[in-house]
Length: 362
Image (cartoon, rainbow, N blue to C red; front, top):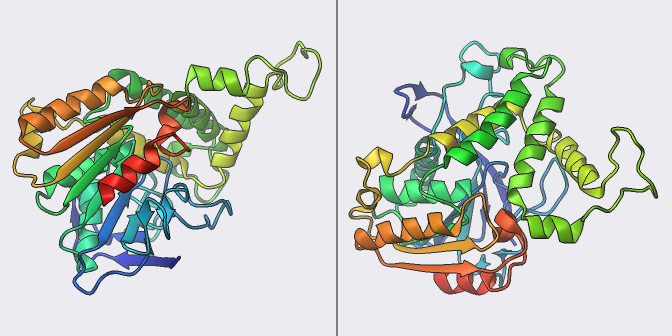
């Protein structure tokens, strides 16, 4: 499979929803498969909160396979023998696209002087990247979780630029409960003595706070049944309880591993900015309280997929989106898949998911 690492500086400043402008803006992206001469076979994949552009190739920091390697590649449901797949790191990210760790106008990292961005700003940045690549319209826009929000924003903000829109484990707005979880994560980062108001790039990073944020978030990605099946109340590398505060239970050890590993590849300030962008997302609010109006004249076909054990972005939220798309007159199909994996069902080997993706992408 062709794997091209790229970074492109946009030719013009990027206007942001806050009223600020960002310049210069670098978009780091990966391209898999060849772009057709008429540029008609492009698929854009939008990544989730902690994802990046390495959707189907080895991650340069962790050495692990791409985060959707099982779905994207030659002969796979998103077939790179047929399609040119593009996945970009969002603005505000930390894998090459302009974000808080990037050098600002003074030559030092922005830190918290970086402007607050929204999901719409992220989609706008990727639309500008597609412009620079000469791609006026994509065969499909695909995203899960925050990536699904970006796909919806792309369809709403740029009618006619996507033939198909596939939204997985996502919603048209961020719920109060999910905002609350994000705030716990942000506060854990900002309470870390090394955060230093976001100006930590020349010294120790707030890794302890970021690890706790990741641990709290990771719980929301899983289901109770999945945690019970995988860990239960089993002890970790011991026969009896320690009567202390080490990782007595396997689930504790797992969360600590997730937290410490995350700090090796992610920037704490990016975590603040990206979670804030998700929290601000509410397509209905942005269209006078009527969600259907967000999709007026979109021209795209939609497929919305939920997972029965996902309590982060529930089936009810997906059904609300589907009703709005119906009201807008947009062709839409909907499926709820049964999965033991909770929110992570869209990333893992959920029965039926491959067929849904392959069938919808066409």
